[in-house]
Length: 94
Image: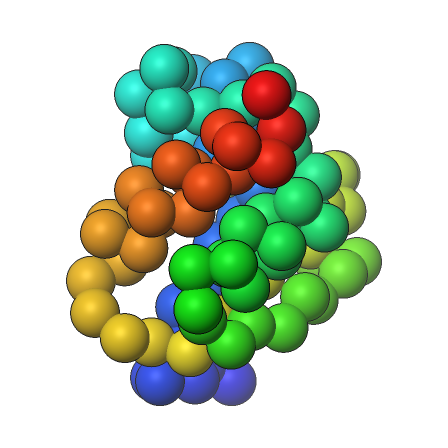
């Protein structure tokens, strides 16, 4: 069931090895190769958002890979959150 007060962040959004059609939501210069769910969660928490990690769930475009996702309490547009997380993720994973 969909939760309207939360945003979903899939690791593929931040993956520089994926194309835009495969799900990447950022320019390659702001993405990292194969980001880990734990790194994304750390980045979200560092910018001050409450979040939960959901594991053993597959991104809809690649149902054979169980990557999991991060569920974040909504506080503004999703694109802004993705950019802020990616900037922090670059510092967590150089």
